[in-house]
Length: 178
Image 1 (tube, rainbow, N blue to C red):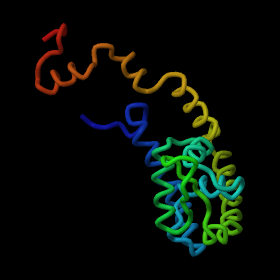
Image 2 (image 1 turned 90 degrees about the vertical axis):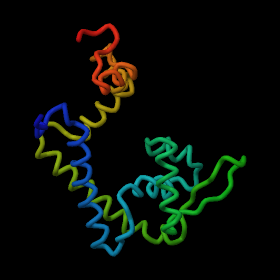
Image 3 (image 1 turned 60 degrees about the vertical axis):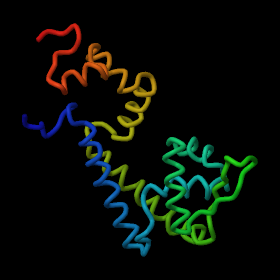
Image 4 (image 1 turned 180 degrees about the horizontal axis):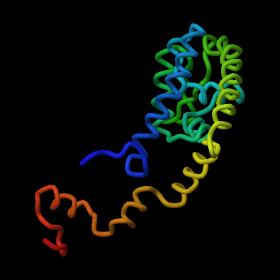
């Protein structure tokens, strides 16, 4: 079976490719600025901490719109790179994230890059038939109302873990036709 070059069947693959292209070019700009170790995924963390000061990882995750796990992984990488510090919070489970002096020194350069990236993104969107940022916002809202998992279950009500195992074993699913 050939894989189609586009369309809903490979949406995740195409979105990952788009994100790779966008992030790769932004990372190249960071490298041009002498910031080869600064990753695009660090940007929302630095922006929030620069604007509002130290926060718990949970509050940071909420502010940047990612899961606690994703924020924790990004913060761990940033800590290894010396961009953030972690201090204990009000209880043993909470950690407070703050920018290090190294990261604070980068903020003016990063702000100039962020402004240039925002301008470039606006110009990019002007080339499209519909603004990508609006499509992404609408997609996130739609998935917030009903997850992709639920949509798949609705599209194939008989597709369960047991049915998938039967199919993988070459057997017809229970109640299915042979």
